[in-house]
Image (cartoon, rainbow over the protein chains, first blue to last red):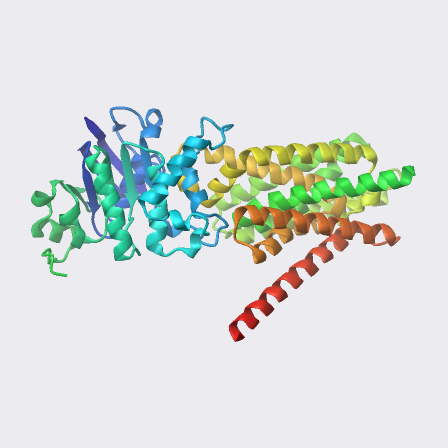
Length: 242
Length: 280
């Protein structure tokens, strides 16, 4: 089934074209990287399809429906840079946010929610840190907590914006392991990614952006020097020797 | 006997106002909008006086209504200016606060000069005077504060979540327009009530100082609320006590000074402890 279907999506930022005529159809059960230079529209693309910034489009469908109808099947992990790390909120409380439901405002978090939060924290290896204030953690640990917040929503589609920036090797491995497990369970994972050295090893498909769709397809076909050079303007060494 | 009871009731009323301000101040503080409450407090002065001039009576709920309308007008003007002018947020807040407050002061001077109007004691709104509050005022204020506290308790986790990570909550389907309106509304209501006790000039102290002091002591959500409520109640009671026992001293400055002392002591203690720990 089509997980995401985008037809003729364009985004303008301050009268500048940030994205032009993007057409994409993404199948379920894949792990997909969105790559491109800074300012190539990577984050813009996901924010636009999630309705977080104004955009023009013919169609943006998730599982064949409007986002509003299938919101409970989609989760999103924003970039971490906008977070106030001094905020008085604990690891557990951050993950608990994932269980809040705007349509059930009267509902308190119950036993099942607690169970899910517990499991998610355990899966990302953060259970022992549950009562810590979020700012006490390292960047990688923080990202694992946000992944746990996504896990408790138990969605079919997971969209992440630069989840690996400022993340240590160990956390990166934990996150990739959890994501691979999700993919094997049939979930779709769409990631704005900046680290080209990990693309070939972890992603099935790649979307290459340069304010328009340069290429989209299976990693071995798309992730090639000619396309990457076109996207980044410089030749890149894609061999995995570093 | 009756006197003692009404004084007890006064303390209860002030504590309610102070705690509600402190709790709502937590949200303003965490949104880094500490000055917005100050702007609203100053800017509601003309609203109160116009409400009095139009109705001709000094009745709490009418003045309250005037204050709430002026409060919304203030925030709308701030939002409009931020959107359509190139001014920075702090300049916009200062500009709006000064113009509304200046207008309010002019109106106040006019009222003071009219022999028929000057009896209402509207100048109490500048610095606050708890003894001018009647039992009916206190009934109304305690009722509204209880209502606000119940609603906040109900939505507490959601409000904190929205302040912490609005992008995520917006994505989850929470309407930021509605929630911003809600947060503005509770700020305006508590300001409209609070100024009748502590005055427009120092209302922001009640909003901001308890949470600022509490934040020195803890970074946990629950503890932060407990400390905020503790500082709110204790300063309200001490400040009001001194105010009642001195014939002329207004309540607002006294409560604010108690809060400032609390903050000063907390910051000093924290500095001292970190210093001794570093040395030991």
